[in-house]
Figure 1 (cartoon, one colour):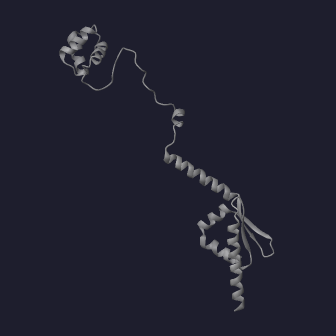
Figure 2 (spheres, rainbow, N blue to C red):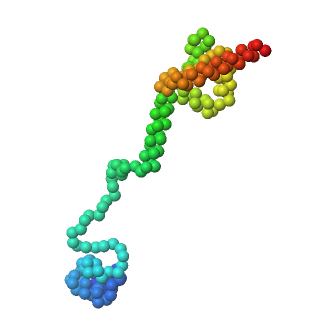
Figure 3 (tube, rainbow, N blue to C red):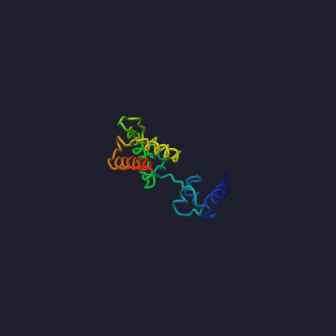
Length: 175
């Protein structure tokens, strides 16, 4: 390339004037890259874009490694979701370790079923389960909760339900 072509090429790339491009090429010994860098160092470029320089500079920052991305702190929403999930998992585990027990009038254990299954059955067929429980109560069966979520208050309520069913049954027999 001759001097004129180099000046025009430099002007197209930087948006500088003819005299600025010629001075930069003369200062750089007709090296186009060095002339670009010289113009940039002297603030003569008008184009916004990639920078060039022959001086030492910081290396470009690379994309974080996947391991580094995973080490980022979760935001409050993610932390809340994680906490909710852990709470649900813990509750399901406790429900699996807790049983609803049905005993007969004589105190013999008729069956026991995990509380998780009771909840699923209640959600799937509430009225059927309710009808079966009422029938079982009228036949004198008692219900109680045993295991990880065992509470005397719950068993007391279940006992009162059994007593109520017995009193209704007695009132029905009197009439």
